[in-house]
Image (cartoon, rainbow, N blue to C red):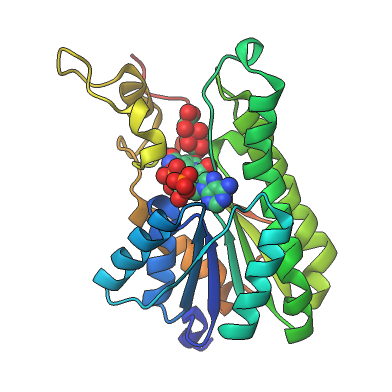
Length: 265
Ligand code: NAP
Ligand code: GCO
């Protein structure tokens, strides 16, 4: 096998919600593997912040203001990308939100808001990019799933429902478009140090670790939280031609949580 198969040279990658956090790390890693990076965020100030951060790393990224739940805006953004930058070879559906509320206290509107970003949006963006991938004879779609694609826990009903659905959307895109040389896989990060999980890691008033922080450490064989860097290698692999026969798979990058009953207290 020619190891150039792991390169992303000449590819255009769209990473949604990639001004910071997991999306930013994956996009920056893909850039270092040779890809041209396009990303979006809801607010111009965040797009500008992201562009500056990429530039700081020597990456000339392209940023768009676009709400991934807005199908018209997504179609317009994808058309602009295809006209101005090139066909999208790699799509990473990364943008996501979570609302940690006990289910019976959560409004239907709050539930729908999470489903909209975490499940409907990957459908909307994938639907926008697949026709061009078919025309060009190849494509890679990577959906950022979660431990909650497999497990539940208190207060994350909407998020778990969305991420469970995203696992099945991943398998269905594989099933429906695999014949067009489109590979759609998921990455299931474990517990990663980002703004989204910051509330779960806050130091207590007495300086001790957050109880949830201690819980995750006890449930992870690696005995640590993941970092966004831990996700870059798996993402580059799934975006590269080296994974052309991997399809419909969710690759859990979780330090072993899913395999482990947890350390005895
Ligand atoms: P994050 O720090 O909260 O970043 C999420 C990004 O998505 C932000 O840039 C956010 O922009 C953007 N976004 C949210 N709603 C959007 C919308 N409607 N349109 C466009 N962009 C939008 O989250 P993260 O921890 O990096 O997580 C990224 C992905 O990984 C999410 O799908 C998350 O569910 C998943 N994940 C995270 C972990 C973890 O432990 N952190 C583990 C498993 C899976 P704004 O700031 O403007 O909202
Ligand atoms: C939570 C966390 C998790 C992580 C991630 C784990 O409240 O349990 O936010 O959901 O974000 O999804 O894989």
